[in-house]
Image (cartoon, rainbow, N blue to C red; front, top):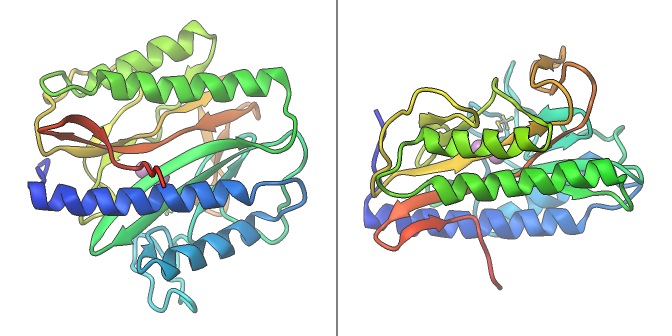
Length: 264
Ligand code: MF3
Ligand code: CO
Ligand code: CO
């Protein structure tokens, strides 16, 4: 069941979306050769807590106990953001031993919970100068997200989003990850519907009050992924690069609104 949001709820989702976007911009400002992914996690967690929210990934799918000294339960995500470098497709775990290096690409995925509502966004950053191939993959992935948002009009079918993303990615010779998808979002981090980024059955029509993420993961090589032994990190099956961008959007009276934006 897709839970439609009221105007009041969409106001709150705008607030959490704005904070997620601010936290993402802050996270991006920390990207440089030599920084560890745990250092980025640490600073972004403090940023989110300082703004009266909590980082949704911390101890997910459980709730963070004390976010500054969390007790991580078995099988739950151990940190506050996801850091997915190079061949990591999604859900990369920050580490004190993983340093960003010149030429890397890294996706930072931020989700905050503010006043009970989640906002979720991500972007892939360049570490220093990257190869033309990496740059083209990242730029195409950003265009895939834009094409997906463009297709997400009231009255369209949900899978028009995935179809437009797949068309664009494949026209550039890339593949679309199928094992992870976008999702409804609200009082819960992950709600119905699942938002596939490839062609599939048309799905429901988009209606006012729907709020969901679009977060295409686009691979240089094959779309298949492998899960590492940590139970979270998904990598490309062939070890080639993967990029991702994510926004939370809402279908409202004002049209299709991107919630995870900040202009200040
Ligand atoms: N932020 C991711 C998403 O876009 C989900 C991360 S779940 C976590 O849906 F547990 F890995 F944090
Ligand atoms: Co996310
Ligand atoms: Co998401």
